[in-house]
Length: 98
Image (cartoon, rainbow, N blue to C red):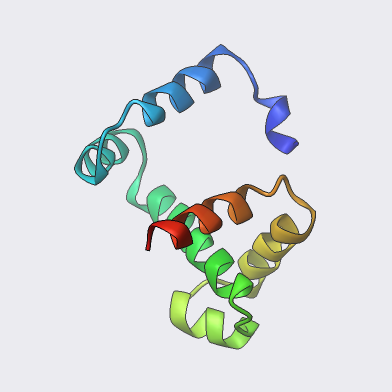
């Protein structure tokens, strides 16, 4: 995993902080303080790209709907195909909840 390079106390604290949030409103408040609008947008855009890729959408459809660059779409595709299965895990859980 790429993130293993960052593994440590600081990252553990960040993940523990995220896991301590109880609801969407708390997420909005925490992420408003901890990240820039651009960072939050980029992360949410990547998740949407992953969702659309797993649904079989084309790059052009994804680019049109999400405004993501083809480089971002390709990067997300690479993570889906060769990554740590994080997108798959989260998207599967979100589908179960819907």
